[in-house]
Length: 398
Image (cartoon, rainbow, N blue to C red):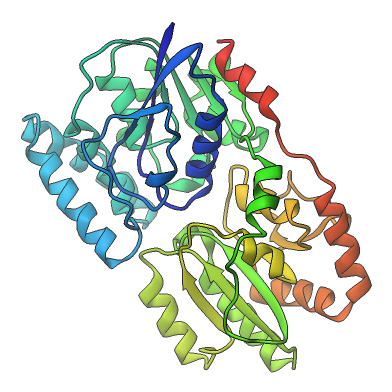
């Protein structure tokens, strides 16, 4: 019987995390033993790890990794990682080597900068595995590359590598350790290969596994909007981070309100930009119009109750949030960027627009004003099929 290890950074509420849990639930425990190591041991989805999967973390912490308490925990984890396993000078050196490229780009990303420290200071597994899978870039990839003994090592990349903030100095040649690198969409192949052209023969597409039947079932569970609002509801799902561009969404909501549209925009997600976004919302007088609901374990009732789903992001790999919205029949407005454009056919099952407040507001306004068109796009979105269980053959056959 084969033994497989999966490693992921956290199990917070996110697309890559949900996709991993779906895959783990699908794998046959009768043909392989499955271990899971969550690098930081925390996340709202920790309780959803399937029973047949052995969790290597000593304890289970189902708290958020994005709220204030989660950020304090992450800071403590980084500090303990710095002292665990020794090599303090090496850990500090990795930070100092990765810092200059970030400063040149004028984008300091502490989360990415410190993944090397976390991976170097993580508890290392004693056993050797037949296969080890780094399910996400950053800490998980570094950990599997450097500290897991396995006959074969695989990795999965979920983002546009050029735009995400990762650099060769930060990665320290980790990708050379993987026999196969799976990308969640063809759109992110060339951005990755422009950074790592030597990996061209080892990359392959592997769409995320999304269980549409389960999503539709969970959408019927209790939950969803509870504010009694009777107007049109707009919904976005995503972490409150630079990538998701919610500051632009707030400006778009202001334009909609000034134009007289009766709608309320809700966001499911948490992140380190909450304070900044709340201040912008207050400054524009949108406290009742743009509502940050935080992260929820089951977002599907919200999708089902929303009139329009909006995914106006700076970059994507392949958005599971878009797939979830399509599954539940949401007409979609999305920014015309990598990842989004491969999931939406313009004016067939959604609208693509530039990532500008005016363009976003105009596209939303078109759907708010045209009930027939909105319903037509929603029906077409619901008819789309996501990747099936057959997709995992690409992972397992290797």
